Length: 267
View 1 (spheres, rainbow, N blue to C red):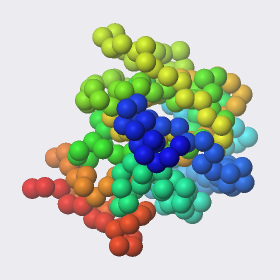
View 2 (tube, helix red, strand yellow; view 1 turned 135 degrees about the vertical axis):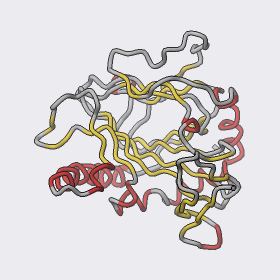
View 3 (cartoon, helix red, strand yellow; view 1 turned 45 degrees about the vertical axis):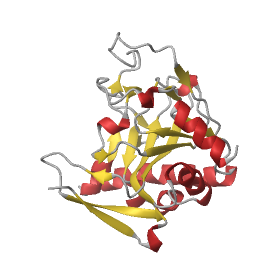
């Protein structure tokens, strides 16, 4: 699909699926790196390294382990832990896609691995990312890259088409047990909720106001996702009263080749 058509689809639906963003070889490299990061989680925890806090255990898995490794729900700030995932944030095909939606100057807001482990993967309640992100206007684009096949059986992403036009709303907590519904609300028409199955290497891009979530993974197949969120320099940093007044973000494209940009909250 041509860039203009991609942008029209994204602006109408609030999300867009990009097929075969990564090759099979690139996916295999990422999967090996995820295995290394699981081992790193054990090492960091054993020596009391503060970086261990970037690894979040699956909250409802109890004391479960996988071949002596932790059952993880996600890993935050992956670019600071892994060269593989730092470089993936600036993958040329990925940047071309995001630039077609946001323009040529791009900063990286978030770099995360979402891991929905086999048998134990919890549900992720419906939510809007902008409810948790101190950025205005809420015009970020999240790219969720499938590193394993993602289907309804292992908890693929679900998106409410057009919900990015609804404005910011409250949806309740995100981490939910496998048998919980994805929202406690009964005042919203959820008929537009769509499963977004992906093959390994595919990606879904969605607006930071798009309502999305995912079901549980009770299957024997893990669901691994590399997640990045991008924004243009027109977006302002607006932390709450307790947040830091300045924050530095990596530049992944444009901005005259600068490495980082530091944004300061308005006084």
